Amino acid sequence: MNRPISQELLARDVTHLAYVAKVGTPDKVPIAFTWNGSHIVICTTKNAPGLPWPPSRTGC
Image (cartoon, rainbow, N blue to C red):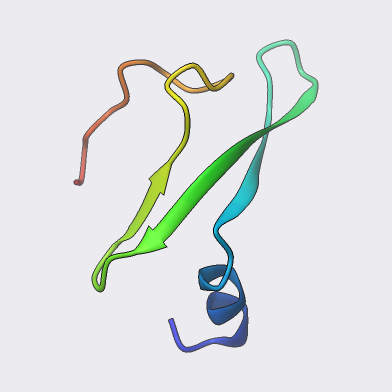
């Protein structure tokens, strides 16, 4: 977390996650994230395109 790019990302409140949609076209989802001291916590709306609902809680 001490790398310059890590510090730059942690200074932001919102970024965009890019992915390839099921139809093969690029798409993006706005996400918010925070560092809680041990994990990066990522949040978005429950109706964000390309994301399963309910979300998987594996590894949390």
